[in-house]
Each structure stands twice: as structure tokens, then as C-alpha cells.
Image: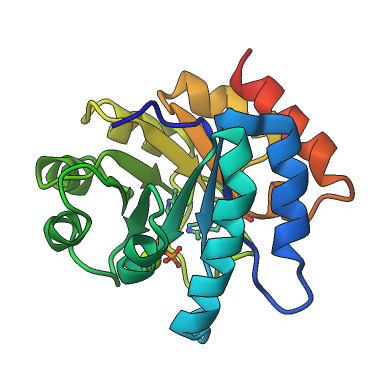
Length: 208
Ligand SMILES: Cc1ncc(COP(=O)(O)OP(=O)(O)O)c(N)n1
Ligand SMILES: Cc1ncsc1CCOP(=O)(O)O
Ligand SMILES: [Mg+2]
């Protein structure tokens, strides 16, 4: 797998959001350090996901930044994205690996050491670990695991751990100290008054 960026921006496609403007702003600051994960609402059509993914890929290309597609691996393949991300309600990790083939980047969600190790054993290249902190971006999540939960998972696997859920620049140092390789965010960039500045702050915290 090519080296994975440490800052993952997940597109915010909730009503009233402007994900492409936010992606543009973040790319201009983070460039090749950014991974953009295309995530759409469950109610979105495949065509909407495909169109957004194509547009995100076109924005990423000049910067050499990677684009991953959440959940919909057929969309990832259709647009020639670098790979995809799956969780408990999506294809099982082993099946996702078969779909993406041996070289596609595959992320899997995990919040406990055993499921994390199992996901890696069947083909995950990185783990999205959380929710680390409370988030208002996604409902119905279990309790936050905090940096201690991240430490438990990162100690059990030898792939990059990407901490997710309520991540802010101020929370990055504790997550890195717990063994996280990087972070994934929605609100910290998309909900910021100045997404460029928020990206710079996250990046600064990640590279300290
Ligand atoms: C980097 C990263 N980590 C975790 C998730 C969550 O995936 P999942 O559990 O499948 O939930 P949805 O995002 O599909 O609602 C993620 N997307 N990215
Ligand atoms: C998709 C997802 N899975 C766990 S937390 C989360 C959303 C993270 O969003 P935010 O960075 O705004 O807390
Ligand atoms: Mg999912």
C-alpha cells in the first residue's frame, strides 16, 4: 500500500453542506497529506455517490491526494478511487478485500482489539477506530472509547490506526500518544468557520 495520509477528511453531505468547497480548501493546505473519504447519506443514490466521488477525485489528483469511498465499493471501483472503507453494516472485511482486489486500500472500523486484529487478518490495511469522543455528526453510536480505547486497539495491530469521532486539533496529541497514526474528521473541518485554518491546525497537531 502507498503511504497513507494522516489527515482523513470525510465528506459532509448533510443537507445544507457544501462538501466540494470544503474539500478544495482542505486540499490546498494539506495536499498529499490529505485522504478524502467520500461518504454520502444512506438515502443518497449510487448515481449521486458516483458523481460526488468523480468530482472529489478530480480535485485530489493535482495534489496527489488519495480518495477513498465509504461503504459503496462498487463506486470506488467505478471511479478508480484508491480504495474504500467498511464497517459493521457493510460488506465483511474479507468480502471487501475480494471486491477491491489485492492492491486497493481497505479501511475497516474497529473499536476493540479483537475485532481490530480480525479485520487486519482478513485484509484491512488501516483501521478507523472510535468513536473516540462524542460526536453530533453520526447518531446511534456506542459510547466513546477515548484515548485509552485507541491505545488498546493500536497495541493489538500493526496497521495504521485512524482515530475518529469528535476529533479536534486539541485532542490530537492524546490520540497520537495512544498510538494513533492519524485522524478522520467531519465536523472539525466542515463545521469550521474557516476550513483552511482548521485543516492547518489539525495538520500542525499531527506533525508535532
Ligand atoms: C476512518 C473511518 N473510520 C470509521 C468510519 C465509520 O465507518 P462505519 O462504521 O461503516 O460507519 P459509516 O461511516 O458507514 O456510517 C469511517 N467512515 N471512516
Ligand atoms: C462516521 C463516523 N463514525 C464514527 S464517528 C463518525 C463521524 C465523525 O464525525 P466528527 O468528526 O464530526 O465527529
Ligand atoms: Mg459504513
